Length: 185
Image (cartoon, rainbow, N blue to C red):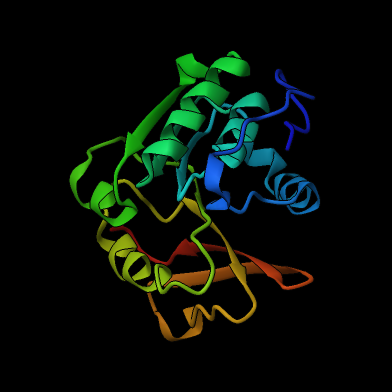
């Protein structure tokens, strides 16, 4: 796994051991960043279920001003810190070893511009987050949320009036969903 472009272009990232993470494929990651290209420069990113930090580090490499990385696994957050050092982006990243929902409920940060949500597939971790996001002060109607999920992992955003679906892209069994809040939190 490597950084596609920007200040850390071509740098290879470490992966947490044990095969517990599923990094975004370069094709999926490249397409996602092509779609949000106009939003990246100087933006604040939140990478939930961050794994190796692949998405947030790509955002920083492309000109993001700050990224918070959240993962409950210590091995993952240790790897993210190493990857931030490898890419010389540690000064713009902050790493949190905690449950993603708990992070949203207890950590106070200025609003984020873009949020990556890439949970383990088919584990039921999206629903509690989707229920809490509309009331979280770290988000606004301008915050762009991007979820990577498996086709079988249904979101049901059409049944949630707090959300406005913007786009969905399918890559084999992987779906990337882009959405925003409909109203202020």
